Image (tube, rainbow, N blue to C red; front, side):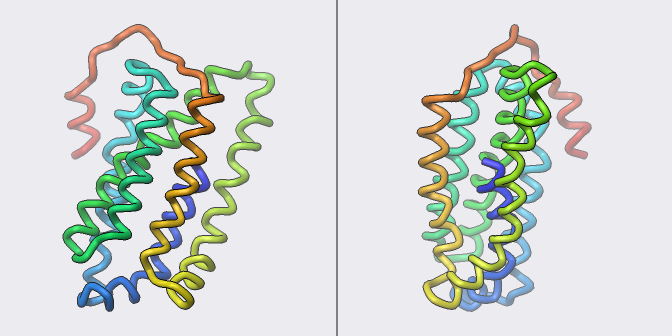
Length: 188
């Protein structure tokens, strides 16, 4: 999840001029595709913990990766900037839940004494994502098409879903009411 999200955060920047050309838009207009994703992630990260507590870490994680993966497919099929922005929001909804829920599952699954090595192990692939993103973006744009910067997420997402179904624990906690007031204040 961390790798996929980190890769996606950097791979798009390299492809923006090619996407703009393909969609007959100015490269500056393409910033809305980045902002829509980033804003969605920032707004919905606080909701992820509540959702995981209520519905279970495995279930929410699988839904998150599924949304991100389906959003990636839809982004690849976009034929306009408006469609791309809408599908980036869908990607962002999934992206907002992937990392926090995965970390929450790790925090609950391992004792404190084992947590640091486990978090280091999980973090390492995520640190490779921003390094590979611009390189892969350049390769895809040069040798294939910009669509591949989104299509690369599909096999990664499917592997993540299969792995989560088999190995991820499904922790829940007693139900609490969602703090809508706090959420709205955070959003302002």
